Image (tube, rainbow, N blue to C red; front, side, top):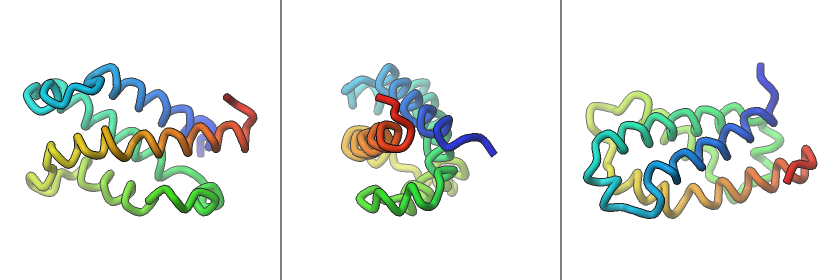
Length: 115
């Protein structure tokens, strides 16, 4: 198994890629199929890395909905025949990812001394 630190860094890198793809431009995201495909792929990788974090780490950050992240990963990867709503994806990108990224930064600093 890869180190937890690697997964944490990957989450941050994936978030930065998503921000480069869409910035804060909801219209661009909702209207550009190529951007949607790229963002959904990066999100699936990000959520996969989040699922690989140690249970003790997840327990230490109960404000993060780890089980919902895992469930969202399943929807992203398997698509459940169209259950993926782009408005919901946008809400996750704009409203939920920033708090996950803040927690990941805290974990990296507290556990590994990385700013």
